[in-house]
Length: 108
Image (cartoon, rainbow, N blue to C red; front, side):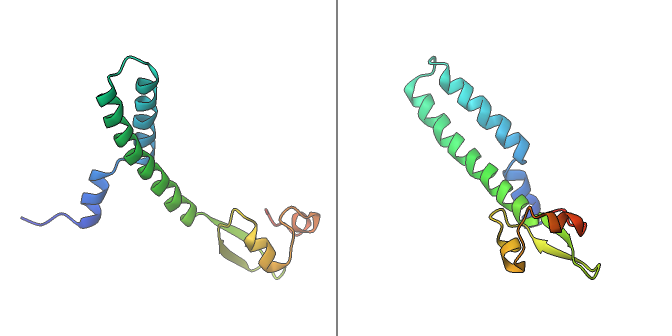
């Protein structure tokens, strides 16, 4: 019998972002109801912390995969890693929202 790949087992143990977020939101609603015993609140808090970490991990993975396609002046397309702090614009010496960028057909 063939063994399952490690990535398959990791995928099965951690829910998708949307599932983890839905579970986390449900836990929060339940905890806010004021009808839960203290011990259950603590268990739900622990589970919520784990779900939060899954969501955070999935978002970090998504950020790492986002790339901005920027058209250079010589019409060569290059891929740059996503930088939400404007670091890629600083490297090129351009302002992220400059009118010159829009005139050259650049998106950002």
